[in-house]
Image (tube, rainbow, N blue to C red; front, side, top):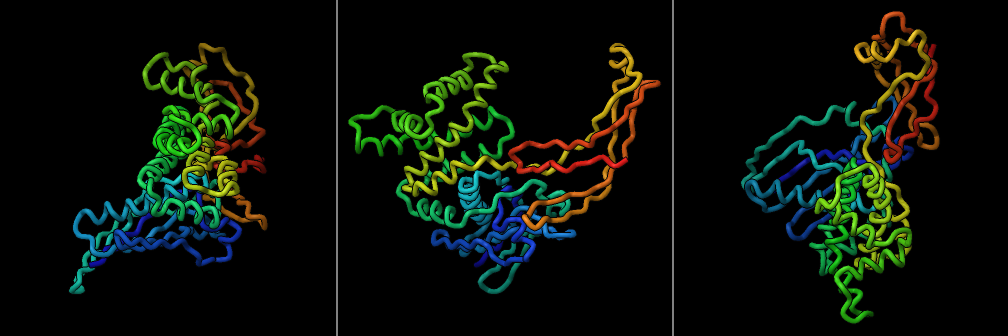
Amino acid sequence: MLNLFRYHVSAMAAIHDRKALQQNPSDNLEFVFKKPAARVMVSDNVVKKEVRLHAGFHILVILENANGPDAAGIATSLVDRILDTVSFSAVAQCEPTRLLARIEIENDGTSEGEFFEGPDPDDSIIIGTPRAIDGKVFREIWTACDGNPNEERILRALAWFRKAIREQHNIDQFISLFVAIEVVKPLLRDLLRTRVRDPKEWDGVQEIFQNKIKTVDFADVNLARNELLHGFRPLEPEFGSRIAAYLEPLRRATIYGLGTILGLSRETTDRVCGYAPRRLFLKSQTGLKGRFRNLPELDVLLTRFPEIEINRKPMSFSVETDGRLNITFGASQKFALPDKTVFEADTFVMTGPKDAGLDLTGASLDE
């Protein structure tokens, strides 16, 4: 019996960078599993406009001798294992899988299947710049995980790391990263036993912070964790800024900790630690900046606050020789303003988070 599953995954990682994608490459990542017997093929999903654009991953799973509803769970778990490693190696967001099709082929040749609606091609285009997977780095991490005596614990930490990269809010990122490092804490302590007699519970993590991070004391990070999870204090703005300051050290400590446990080369660990997270940014927010004439007093503004409605026209795309994506679109604006108020726009603006790999330069306002 064979079960075939096809998935779509939105991701800020890619097999090919945007420049290479224009050459219509056929490379993909292929994985062979013995238990369960399966093959998984990962390829860049491409939307063809004026140029070829990234739209996440297409993933095909061929699963042997798996019956009933368990087959879908097994296939998804294999894909998640790959995506967890991709997210770690590229420090890039990989969303949950979206099942597009399932085909079941019996040994006698009979078959049945299910097909599901896929993402809208325009909505699936990655507007930011996905990080191309470094094949050497990915293979080293994958090989070190595969068959490791502590594989299950390591994979659990990778899953929490991927979740942290997916989170949009600082507190959620902090919690996920802390859980990831707490998962590997016993393994770091075991490694420390070869040099230190009876190390304490957190001594392995402490050593990572002392020798590799150096910018913050782990005791401060741990205190913030206890205050957050045990309700020692309200979530005031000052506390939120503390949490934000701990995100990069905690992320890098998790990478160095897993690198130590897996025996990764210093070059690989340093490279992954040097990445800033890439997060999905599928919807841009555009607007206009300018000056008001005859803006009324505050009491009038409270009932007639200025509003703008922007209707975009279809986008067109081009790719520079260096791989940079240019997006061109028109827009019409309709204002709802207090009586006698005039808004004179002089600048077109577009907003988006820096960690989405967005280059928002070059925007202009056409008269």
